[in-house]
Length: 240
Ligand SMILES: Nc1ncnc2c1ncn2[C@@H]1O[C@H](COP(=O)(O)OP(=O)(O)OP(=O)(O)O)[C@@H](O)[C@H]1O
Image 1 (cartoon, rainbow, N blue to C red):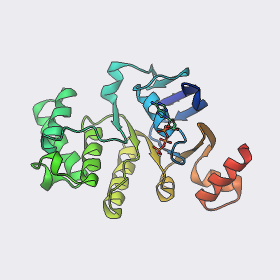
Image 2: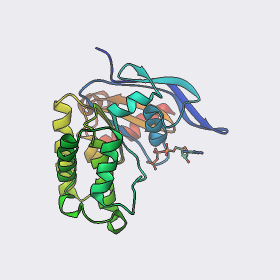
Image 3: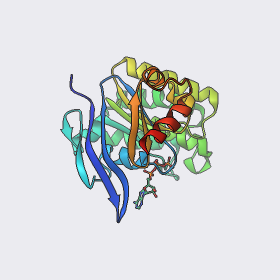
């Protein structure tokens, strides 16, 4: 089986600062993989390199068997960045339509995908409002809807549920599991341990390195601890 995402000994430095150090990561088709780690550990940098928005200093990345960066791949990857990249002067619906057009969706499919994505993030009744009048959480939700608009095979979501209330967070996770069951591959970054619990596989990141990885239950067996937070601390301690 070919992995959907293959990160091969990727290192990244900004000037003298080493932000990623020889990172290897494979994400299999139909898997939800969580990148978990504290602020500044390198998660966003890794995700940007996987999407092709940034280049590694060393190493390489393949997504769906294609070397990154590649323009055609972008059609197959839904990416939700940490900072919202939205058009404030357009309505939510116009933002969704803009991205649907970029992905060259046909008119009838475009309409259906806008309805689906807006409904998923509970923005249907706010679609006619200008984004400048959206709250922070609404902007996050719209960004998530945009990441899903072209029905991509791979979803890469950088802290998608920050600022989203618990109820909607639950329904977003239910949908991510549904998408996974349909064979989509999902890479998600999070600080939140109860979200880590919902991933099939976790890669714990600290100081630019993956300190341990495995399914939540594999990690529990390996470290003999129930709490993922404590496993993180123990794995980090063993590294030193
Ligand atoms: N363009 C850049 N130039 C210089 N340093 C950078 C740049 N981008 C990121 N860094 C540094 O790289 C380190 C890792 O940042 P990154 O955003 O990848 O962490 P993160 O784990 O995603 O954190 P958070 O959870 O807060 O988003 C940080 O120390 C950050 O300051």
